Image 1 (cartoon, rainbow, N blue to C red):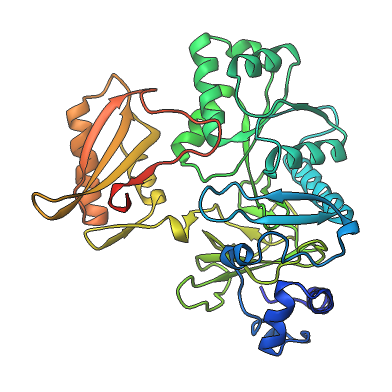
Image 2: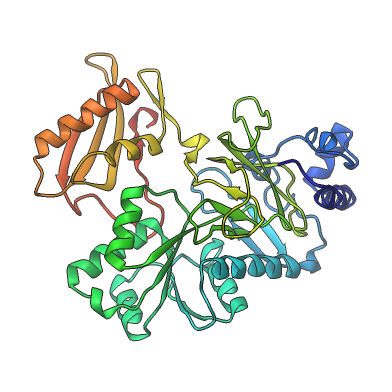
Length: 413
């Protein structure tokens, strides 16, 4: 989907604002001889940017407005390297709330709903984004934040929450705990808005079944406002991205070539009207594709397919490139295996060879040795790698209130 004339005009205005601001990107564009855009060809000559650039500009080198126009800053949730600091103007905050309210509406949520918000508040964009969209919609916000599962469930029951906002990891933890306590008939949830991390079909099905809710994937990242820039519709045919605020491309992560609709690659996003920290052609490292055609729901916004992982999530064993999504697909084909797993990679000095160990949970009704054999066989046939496999009982692996780390590469330690 090529950039249209309206979007081109907005990008041209952004470039001129950046050049006038004297920020980090003004120097990048001056050196590249970029003064504006008037065609799709001009646009595709603009260099990509990514998180490394934002860290180079730490703390506020990407700010494109005077300090008196900045009303808030947020920071990415990453744990390595310098944090990424993103300044917001009042208009940025309002635009983000508008997009988030659209997400709620697309999921069939109304002002009569009671929305329990479990993602974290503070520098992270999650909790406050869910709340701002809720208030813009006119629904009741229940701003719990993460943790304190006893209190979460108590408030869910007492306030008769109808919508749960959470990471998939925490939604799973809540579903398991509600099931364990026999409280399913006391909750009134009808929808779940899930974001922050990719999740397997097995986990999705378990959460939906145990909580009795309809689930929606919400998309976003701190650098581009935060969560709420897109969501899947009731037709469940991909996530609609709001193209009056953002322009989305898919590129080959190795070559940078722009790919046609329908081909999988890395998502690249341009902010069309963001004031505090405008970003043009930002590489998200998320892997997906733009779904061709018009959605059956009637919304004309472009659609991203389910996020399949991140280009920087890849790990290599015995020369084979693997992604967590491939592991999840394999485990999803084995009867009795849950959505939770852990991968440990190490180097065995005694044989001078890398080894990979997969720890997976399984129901007590299945044979653990046979289940391990099935997983080993599938790994060998699909990925040409034979792991060591350990099967443990359900609820053995740790649950997380935020994102769950699944791959531990001890070769890097």
